Amino acid sequence: MDLPELERCLRETLHGFEDVRLALLFGSRAKGRAREGSDVDLAVDAPRAMLGAIGAKVSAAVGAEVDVVRLSEASIPLLRELIRDSLVVHEGTAGAGALWRSRTLALLETDGPWYDRMRDAWIASVARRGLTHGQ
Image (cartoon, rainbow, N blue to C red; front, side, top):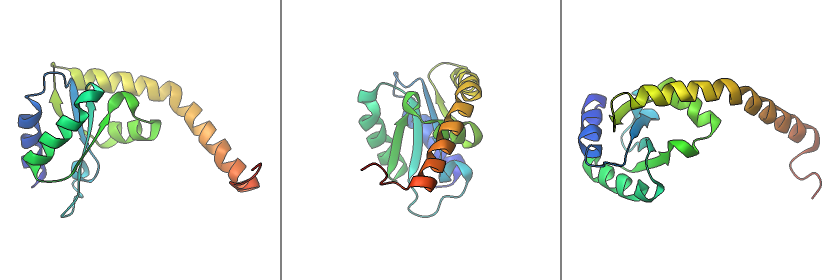
C-alpha cells in the first residue's frame, strides 16, 4: 500500500473512533521507507483502554501489523521524531494537530536540553565505570 492510500485508509478507519483526538503516522511508512512487511506506527491522543481496539481495527484495514503508542506517554526522543517526521492522519477537532505540535515544540524547548544533559551524564558515567559498577 503506497503512502497516499495508507493515509486515506487510516483517515477512514480512525474516523469511527470518537475518543481519538489526534493520530499521527510515523516511522518508516511516514518517511516513505517502508518495505514489504513493515509495520504501521501510530501515535494517538486517546484513552489507554482504546489502544487495543485501535490497533486491531487499523491492522485489519491496512493488512499489516500496527504499533500504537499514546502521545501523552511519548519519550523526548520519540517526540522529536514525531515533530520531525510524522503525518497527521486524524484530527478529532480541527486544529488538533497544530495545537499538539505547538505544545510539543514548547515542551521540547524546555525539557529537551535537560534530557540531553541527563543522557550525556549517564553515558559518561557508563563509559567511566561500566554498567555493573556498584553491584
